[in-house]
Image (tube, rainbow, N blue to C red; front, side, top):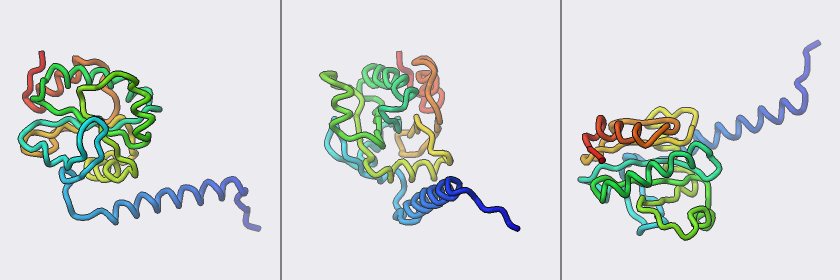
Length: 177
């Protein structure tokens, strides 16, 4: 007699199948635009396509408030945004939280880095698929050169501001004091 799966196992299997189906559906529904043509609502700036930053190196960082490693490295990204004085754009893209929750998180502080929303996770899925973040891990950081090419990806947090500065120097040739 064949053994039967417990109800809990069936439920987990169904949830996994639905989740995989949703991810595949989003991936298949993507249009043919390159990731640099994604348009995201901005919290600290006007909504814009990432291609609007052509000619300027950009660091894209996907994060959420509930991710402790994301919160750990946010000060490093903010310090770089302040020190770069516009020579590099740092865009922190939150893919989970609402604009209100993000504004509450920052309180009265107005970050120099740009804050964007990926409310439906579409940009995160697109970038994750395109740049081998197969597990959908965050923080997920992409270094884009001034020509719009992704030159380096980092899955996980930077352990220090020095590590982030070194990466910027090596990958984008940008010396931040």
